[in-house]
Structure formats: structure tokens, C-alpha cells
Length: 65
Image 1 (tube, one colour):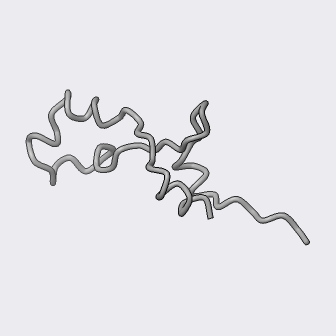
Image 2: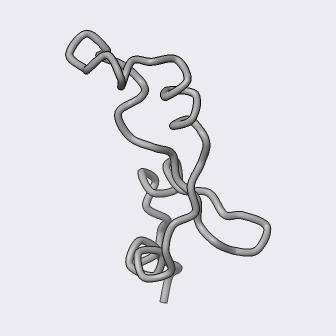
Image 3: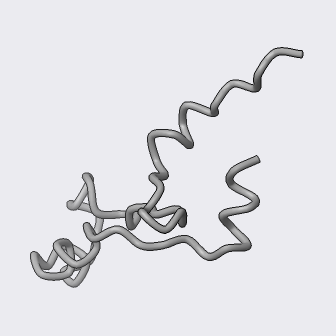
């Protein structure tokens, strides 16, 4: 039986941490700022959102399938 292929979209969006958890980026901070509120466009808000988050274990199991 051949190996399963990795879902390329997931491979680009999620990364493994050193402890094996998955991490992801925040949404809504990459482009189209003209349609967003002043708070969302705030430089400090955007910088905070660029930090990567760990994904909960329940979602991690689902996203690995």
C-alpha cells in the first residue's frame, strides 16, 4: 500500500514545535487593510498577531488527518 500524501495546504500553514505541538499564524493581518477597523490596522496589534500560536490538542488531531 502506498504512503499517504501530505496535504500541501496544511503543510504550509502549520509547523511543528520542538515538543511536537502544532503552531499556526493569526488570521486577518496580511493584506486588505482598507476594509478593516483602525484597531485592526494598529501597528502594535498587527505585530502581536504575527506571533505564532500553539493549536489545541483536539484541533491538532483533526488537522493532522
